[in-house]
Image 1: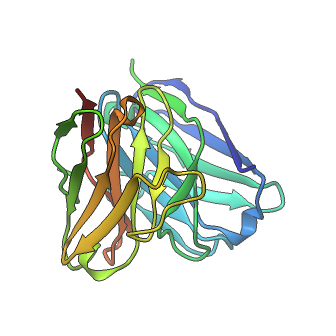
Image 2: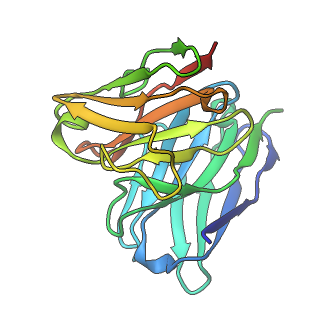
Length: 121
Length: 111
């Protein structure tokens, strides 16, 4: 059974930093691209970032490029999202999501339960 | 503004069929087979309902079906049931540097 467990969310001041983690199990982690998708309160889904199975290719939404960094440790089956220069509009539930493909994100098939990030003073 | 356009809401009575559209461009929906649909209930994580335009994951009811014509993908739910109520999102691979785009979501109400 695929399981994705996010952690690291919380309250942070504007301009602050946070690192999210996602522990994966139930599948061969290194074989699949992984994603971060966020959902602001009462809003729709917004794709944030993707990383290939090997970790060699990364992709970002324009809204976070230059501030967020996605990475993975295949030896620990863990996905990360380092977030800096956080803004109020980054407030959202952040979902870790497994892709069906290995090299590029072409379709998410499993989602974690999400971790809430609140950016506020 | 979302990259893919969905109606904000649709509704139907139990037993009826409804269709949710998802309109993009030739750089995303129209250009690739990588369109997915997700169901989300309040306070829950999204759940994959359709992948690669027409395919249903194991365990998803065959009342759910997907199709595509030109730049518009569609999700059809037949034999509506109360449990189908929720938000539905489409997504597509895109050749732009953002890689993945979502629709704005459609709220399905079962009357």
